[in-house]
Length: 254
View 1: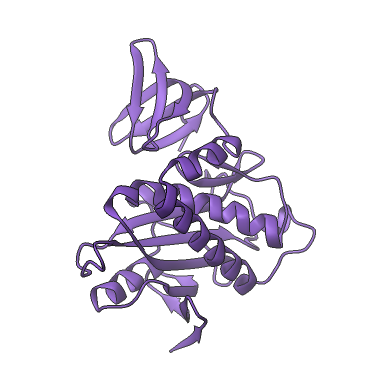
View 2: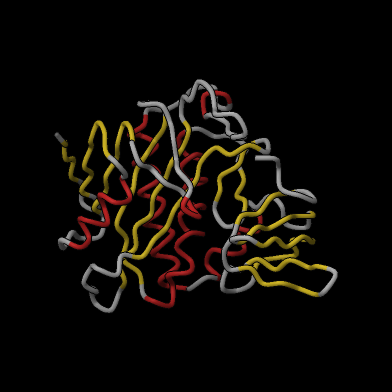
């Protein structure tokens, strides 16, 4: 059974348990839900992250939410950057900590992962004023007692003097996300990338980027105007549009 909370911008559906908040919002988008439809769950049984990985957190220990957004086709590549910056905006507001972004939008603190973001287009949703339907999912560790072996995660209760309630963090993130997407729509990627660079970790460092079965090692020089990562290798600059970046000469074991 779900509980719905309405405000002028968002229709937030609270559920105790769901397979995936991402899939719940994608289904709602296909059924005609408006931008701002949000599903937040206490527990996911089939949560997923980027590259098809699973996202697991004990019940009640993380903010697990997905929201439907609408953007023009030209600004779709900027949505992951808007979502990552919005997490930092929200934390600055409700739980100030030293957090950074690792390309494209992992939220890191002290070299460990605090939150992950997944952005997906929903092609089954009807276009609205020429704008595509996108679903942005957030998993942010609030009070995770321990992490699986090989998962270099960190929880907000290890970092902040006071951990705000889940709904307070959610509302701060949604408000910030809408502001960031408005700026993206109005001014394009330049509205985000300079600040993303200032809040980034890994630029200028040796990195290994894995894409499917391949890997590229080099110096992460910058991000391009379209958000792709520019890695200088011995053979020249490689432009990465997707993949996982590990800071260091090789990816960690596991």
